[in-house]
Amino acid sequence: MTSDEIRRAFLHFFEERGHSIIPSSSLVPAGDPSLLLTSAGMVQFKPYFLGESIPPNRRLASCQKCFRTTDIEAVGDTKHLTFFEMLGNFSVGDYFKREAISWAWEFVTQHLALPQERLWITIYRADEEASAYWQEVGVPGDRILRLEEEDNFWGPAGDSGPCGPCSEILYDMGQGIGCQEPSCGPSCDCGRFLEIWNLVFTQYNQDSSGQRIPLPKPNIDTGMGLERATAAAGGKASVYETDLFVPLIERVSELAGCGYGGDEKTDHAIKVVAEHSRGMAFLIADGVIPANEGRGYVLRRVLRRAALFGRKLGLEEPFLTEMAKAVIGRMGQVYPELERRKDFILTVVGMEEARFNQTLNMGLDIFQNWMVKPRQDLLGYIRPLLGQLEMYEPWRQVIGYFGGVRHLCDNVTGTFESLRGPFEELKAHFERVPDEKGDETLYEETEAAVRKFLSDTTRISGDEVFMLYDTYGFPQELTAEVAAEHGFEVDREGFEEAMERQRARARAAQKFGRDEKVLDRDYRELGIQATPFVGYDSLKYQTIIAGLLVNGQPLQTASP
Ligand code: SER
Image (tube, rainbow, N blue to C red; front, side, top):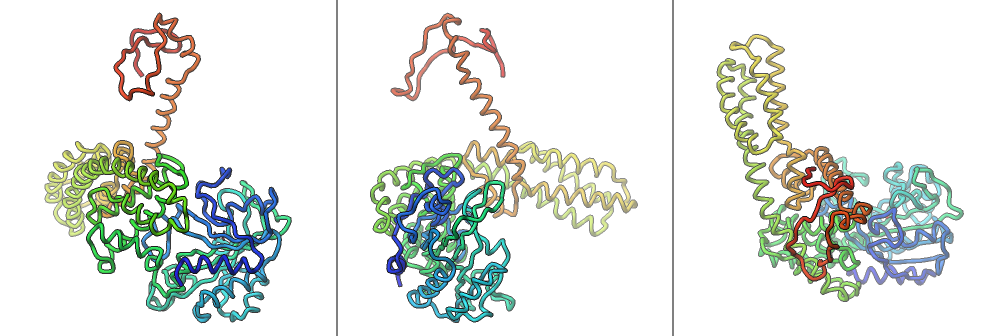
């Protein structure tokens, strides 16, 4: 079955069983401040579950556009996606577990025609009812696994809302897929056992303090990933081999002039580009534009990651508008908003990519030459030192060797301050070392100092990560990824601290610019004319500083 057939068959199946088909809502949840982006089919139905509004029908079904930021870094494996379509049937206080389970089983075994011997069920540990209903439809007891809360209790989406125990249908992709360990089983996360459908028995409303209050009537909220279902029904090893992705994978390969299916790293990059291209096109179609925070940041991040992974494939020139066109071509029939907003999508993608490329080139250069290269030189020199220490070389020789390290360090720390402290620490240790090795404790301390220095050297400091972010637009996650390729890590905490310092500066600057009281009294006191606003007509304007006020007092000079 193709994905289009599965989508249609699913909605038809539930329509026949009394459900109203509801179109997908936007990826930007309407009036739901608890949620960044629509992450499940139930999001648009939350008010129904909470009894805040009346549904058009107590049985609903949909194919919902979803976006999950939690999986961004896992994208490129067999099953994790940021953007995906979720097929779902919902009962608002109408049917409950028995019907939800028997219909899901019927659809999966008869319509998707998945062989029963490849299906596994998970339930919430003490859910005897669910276990009994699964057995009623013919699932053998030993195919039903009981899992704990972290696996089989769903929700809420966001920090509060409806939630409840759940039960999943897993599909065994076959022995050839995943870790291939003898211990591999349905609870292994290696990719062999694919969760295709989650049935949530929505019984509670969780408030923002984490308290769960039973809902007046239990509900059903199910979600089946269309991409995964299509992979399973078509006997494909991953979602990227389904008809939803093949045209996109082909387009990336064509643009990059490289084949798919040969080299693992190349394939991974191709998959990330294809996946993120869908995400960016759909986000923009729903009105999200690139920004440094919130939804706009999610978009910026996937778009920039796509650009970056494109580079790994040798795509140095802008190519993402081509990818956006491919997405619109593949999905526009089902989601007409893509066609309707095509020009807008292409413009936003083109502008953001151009902007990113400009800064990226400069940033990558700086990263490589100022941060990676000197560290590599230093590590190349200092690692053997550790070896010498271990071999109990005469201390004099070790200290002689240290002269070379000092020379490198002086150059390196000239480039970035962050290593100066660790280097000084190391130097202090060596200065305490006598000519002949004798004192075992001192030896151990010195070895520890060298090891610490090594680990400090393989960490890119928060200030450096911040500089790349602030000046060159590198999201911290990207820096971490590029750093990891060189065997380095980044100081995330240090980065957060640098971010906080910048926020404080921004707040202070805002206060300075927006002190309305001062601006009101303003120019008359300073003896100057009101200034006209020219920003609608020109982007550049030559003017003068007419006066300075500090705490309401006119001054001749001022400093921060
Ligand atoms: N809300 C549940 C999920 O996202 C079922 O739709 O898995």
